[in-house]
Amino acid sequence: MAKMTYIKAITSGLDQVLNDDPKTLIFGEDVGKNGGVFRTTVGLQDKYGEDRVFDTPLAESGILGLAIGLSLTGWRPIPEIQFMGFTFEAMDGIVGQLARDHYRFGGQKNFPVTVRTPFGGGTHTAEMHADNLENYFTSTPGLRVVTPANPYDAKGMIISAVESDDPVLFMENLKLYRSMKAEVPDEKYTVPLDSAKVVREGTDITIVAYSAEVNESLKAADALAKDNISAEVIDLRSLSPIDTETIFASIDKTHKVVIVQEAQRMAGVGATVAADIAEEKIMSLDAPIGRVAAPDSVYPFAQAENDWIPNADDVEAKAREIFNY
Image (tube, rainbow, N blue to C red; front, side):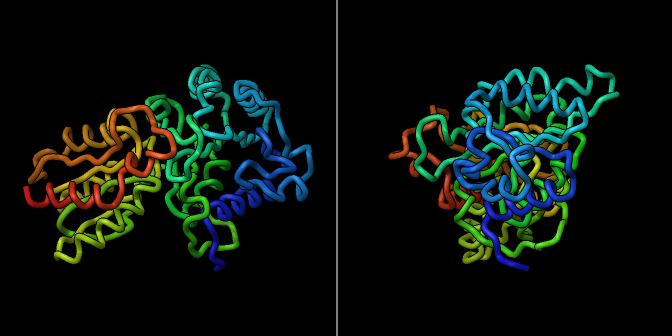
């Protein structure tokens, strides 16, 4: 297996689905000749032609409208919203149309649309380019929301998303794009869209995280291990639906839990995970549910984001607090 960056793994997955199914299409702002603002789709227009990988006007609402119409006529569109902050312009298309249409059509039509969008801090982008907006979409019935935390999952999950008959919001973390490499098979494989993964076994405390915060949690687990505190780290991967079985099984073993997200405490999916745990596993806990999140403020300008985003030290401190409760 070759070692790939997170972004190259996504490109490889997109190449795979374009090659496998002539009904797949990629479109968005600058995804064609330029290969996307981050070069995620670089080379795909040259390989598959302008009819299948093409640029659109700067109109997110139009991009989603086109995707919905195409999906009704047998295509599998893969629209890109250039930054997650721009999904506000496509909110009616995603939330008011795409997520509801399977119900509206009485289950007689599928809407296999995979909406790709980058998000997340740590790369000093302009305002509204790094916002974590997942909570707007995870509270929307009828829409899958996924965000891989490593290159292997990135390729497998983008293939699964495109092949799914459900609409999927596929969140790609900006910081991860080129900051990590991992072994990724050249051949086709898939990763489930509805399951969490235990990425580090442990016995003393469970840390539940997603996206870039999985890596921060793994660093925290390494630091805790130096004091013989064994932390189990779970990568949610799927934000909607949430794989509570994997979380509950871990809590039955460790009896303590910390939930980590980059989004503001009032946003993200940490509160939902905490509520699920409180409802079903409160008697298995030996300490309060710990939470690590960004402050409840507007996402800061680039100069301050490193102080605003939760890091491994924050996760370690909260884990020690809950462990020693």
